[in-house]
Length: 318
Image 1 (cartoon, rainbow, N blue to C red):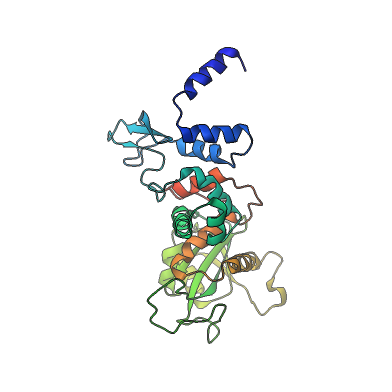
Image 2 (tube, rainbow, N blue to C red; image 1 turned 90 degrees about the vertical axis):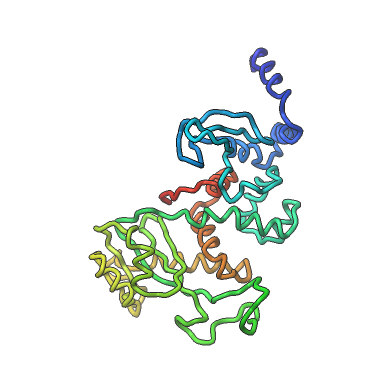
């Protein structure tokens, strides 16, 4: 590095906080654990979270984060303003916690690894996942497979049960849809884009509310022939092919099948087993967590996790 540039760097560092200096030392030693990457993600900001204007400028800092001011509404903000994580503390440990999310670790294991309390680990998990759960494709086209799957209605963590508690790992008293089960509808493009919804009722109106504006008019959908899905396709005038699931392998005419979405169901349920039951209340967040993880093959980074957790707009997921 040129001497003049090095002197400028030293002059800039003179105003750094103790926390920033500690992170810098860890980075130089190769032990930052992604903290600098996370802080860089937190520092970047292009629009005002209050009015959406891109006419913003620097306005000092708060803690270790740069602060900005909007020239339109004249309000100040940081990258986290108005997001679920805006009031969370211990930002220096967020990178470690994001790594725990990438590893799908339990709340207790995450608390132990990050050096935080179990209640804090629980709070962070659901604050981080709040917006991630809403990151779904805004449009789907081509060939889309649609099928529902069932999860046991769980009140895990509820201190005011109105029914007799079940033993962990128990199953519904009878197969198929019932009051004991909740329906999760999954639509998956052959290219991998996936959307899912927890339905209160499995009927045409519920399906239309979730998928009606998402599927392009020329989409070809494959289903298992459920009357609700047939009625939805007819109402939206979508080209629909019902797969005979009694057929061995469920494959008809080469690419005519719903094995893509069924395989997604299997991977999702296998992944959820590690949490030993998920409360129905938090199921949408876990569905979003899995959508983010599925098919990434270790390509996600802590800063991407954080960006997903503080980005309000829905984005197309490839």
